[in-house]
Length: 317
Length: 317
Image (cartoon, rainbow over all chains, first blue to last red; front, side, top):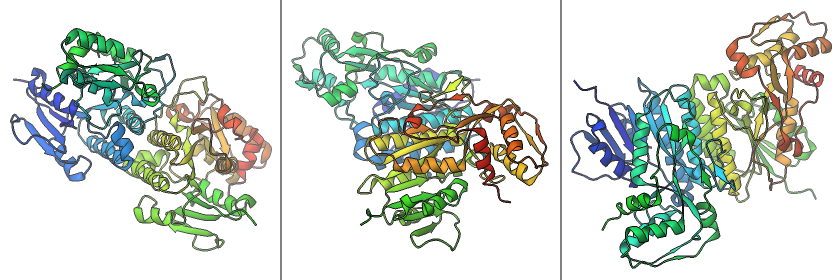
């Protein structure tokens, strides 16, 4: 007999990371016996295996939240959120989704007989531009963007809920994830993904950073690996419950070199026109040390060529 | 001609600190031209000067919040909250008041033509038992109690709102405030105040800490001084917006000695029966350094005798 099946819940299941996580959960043998409950405002109408239940709607409304957790929950991937520029443009909506609805989800999870493993998609936006030479597990948070502050607030709530045994929660601070589709999610860091899109399309692109600028990146494949890995970690973690994920720190010039090496036939022209604001926020990321996450087995893409190959495989052709 | 009058709002105006703050605002010449809008679930029916408007109700409901800010707001003292043991006993209520209603208040303040000075009563509960030899302005927060985590979440929100110029906010981390009335607010630290009450009543008391245990205290008079001082600070502060207030660090034995010196005729017997949990949370407070707050002119009571005298003046006889 197989072990009793679990219920695995995914919010933001229609999003860039969410949709790829759902595909992985459907295909991964480790989740083959599990019921998947996936939620987003919009989800494909058909084509789901029987063990996938789709909940279409806003998880911030009590009825949808009740429906979402109808079968209980052993693992919850909480990816839904209002990010980056979208949060800046509508702070009221950002509060409602990123704080109110998220705390309501946590409150509902608290009512379950066994604490659920909650894997929360936090962000390196909890660190502002620190001016430090290195960010590590001891670096204090100091968010500048609105959604970074909201992610930090939820991290505090999760730390508290985990300490009490209400929720077996883990916050993963995600770096830039590539390659998103063009202009998805209103992210100010959208140029990071647009670069890969432009290269594939053969169109020209102007980057708002300098060639020597540095950024932390993770392919969406490695990001999904990290989320799944977090779901499987033991409950009695001695580390803090908010973990900065390892990420590859790369110069923009070296991404361009790798693009030329991986797909040398692209006719794209890439030029650099640094904008001080963007450069400060996304182009001066210092050295990154993540011993807690490393020790727990989280991994980045390894090298820039692998990162670029994986980023390009996300671009529709 | 006097300067145009301001509108000064106080939430939690019926509470231990709030009621004393309101008395001070009514008597202090610096506030003599101001309109005072005071809010709590219950407030005295009569006896208020004309310039005091009472709003009875829950500031977390949209109607009460609208009424509260009907005249705008130049200064807001936000003291309302579900604290300590009361929060532990009803986490849902604690979330609704400490997070939801507080964020709604902040959202409403954001709509004002000029950013209001928000003085938020945070708490040293944002630090758990740190195990450090000293807590200073660089010590990372690590709350253990639920309301400490919620205070920290609001501090993050205020820091963010202040950086954007939405609200000219300041979070003051209050230490133990003495002497509260017996069993007020469900605070686990209630024994700190019960000691003064017992001494005045002449009743015996068992303290759940050891004589050599140390705690941070501030008289409610010094606390009100700090709140008023915060209201008058200039808007362009370069320090973090969350400030740990200076407090007198005292051994419990030295409080008892001061009580004997100040009121030698009390027949009370004080005995020490340390309880490990309480001792860890309230009886091992390390050295405290608060250069940011010191530089801004915040002051504690100065010495244990003054603290004890001021604490005793709060006890009804």
